[in-house]
Length: 133
Image: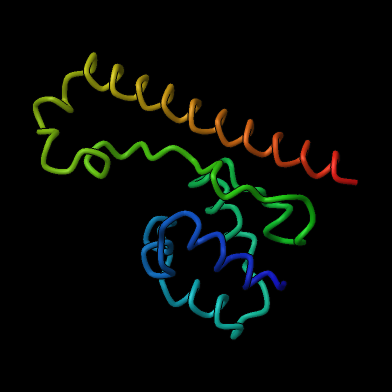
């Protein structure tokens, strides 16, 4: 698997398409399209840096070299409250610092619970694999 294949897998696993992924990174969509379609060999340092800033849990070593595992369920937490609660959260609610703090705290707790569950499942799979050998 080449870097463009891993990038496309990452984009899909995170629930984006190349255009929306580029928008999330704040770069021109043609940059990502050129990489995933093989018109450009590898992502630039700037693209890798923007991926690491936008998605802190992405395994950059895996993305660049293909080495080390990548667990798609360990996605970064979405912190855009408008995206999480469309039509439910209004501006006055979001402007209240205490409400913002509580919502983000709740989201962090939920994110940790999801990651913990994914890790437990991965450990169980590993245990079954080791027992079968």
